[in-house]
Image 1 (cartoon, rainbow, N blue to C red):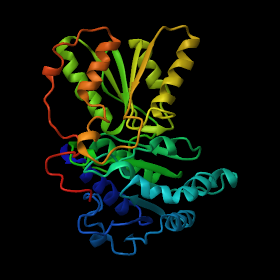
Image 2: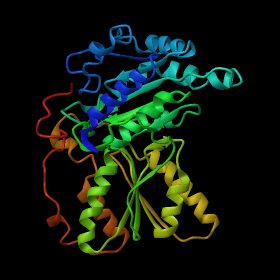
Image 3: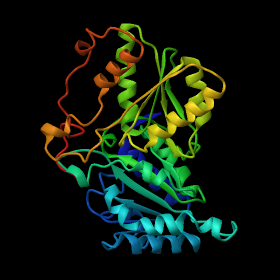
Length: 352
C-alpha cells in the first residue's frame, strides 16, 4: 500500500478505468489544460488522445445532452465541472433526461453517466462559487450521489461510479485534493450505498461526509483527551443512503450529531435526522438529536466574514460537549489554530 493525494487517486481511477474500458470518455471545461483540473485529469489526453479526452464549449446543458446520447450509444462519459454552479446550467438534462430515462422506457436502456462536480469554499470565491449543493441532486430519484472524504474511497467509488449503469453525481471537495492516504495500486471498487465507520465509539454518533467527515474525525481524536468516545460515520454515498449503519450506531450511543457540508434548511442533515427520528421513535428509544452546518446565508467573499460561516473541529467539539453536558473550559487549548479559513493549505494560490 502506498500513499496518494486525493487528486492523484481521482487521476488514477480515471486512468485505470480508461485502460479497462475503451468506451470511457473524459470531457469538460479544462480537462486537457496543463494543470488538468487540480491534477485530476493530468496527462490523460497525452495518454489516450483527443478522441477520448476533450475540452467542451461553454454550453453545459448541450454537452450534457451529448453525453447522455453517448451513454445510450454504449459509451461511458465522465463530465467534469470545476464548480457545482456550472452544473446548474445543465439541470434540465440531469433531472428530466438522465435521471428518468431508465424509468421512462421500462428499464430497457439506462444512462451510465458520471458527472464530477467540485464544491467547497475558498480563495474569496464568495456567494456564487462556494456552494455545496449536494442536497439538490440527492433529492432526485434516478440519480446516485457520491461524496467521498479520503483518497482510498475516492478511487474505489469513482471506479464503481464509472461501472454503474445509472447516472452518478460525484462530488469532490477542493479542500480534499491535497489530503493523502493509503491507496491500493490495483483496480478496485468500493460499493455504492455503504457508509464507512472512520472511528468506533460509544458516547455519541457523528455523521458527516466529504471534508466535514475529516473535521469530525479530528474532533473525535481531541475529545478522547477529555474522556469522550465518539463514533464517526462517513456517509460516502448520499443517495442511496445507508440508513441501516446510521441507525445501528445511534441505537448504541443514543446521541447523534450530524455535521452538514451545506445549509441546514431542507438538507442532508435534515434527512438523516428525520430517518433516525422516524425509525427509533417507533421503538420508543430515547435519543438526543442535533446538527451543525454552514451559516444559512450566501457565503461572503471576504475572508474576515467567511471564517464565521463554517464549522471546524473546535466548534464541533464544543457542540458535542454541550450535548453530553460535559464541561469544556480546557477544550480550546487542545486545538491548534491554523488560520486557514479560506484556503485549504498554505500552497493554495488560486481557484484553478
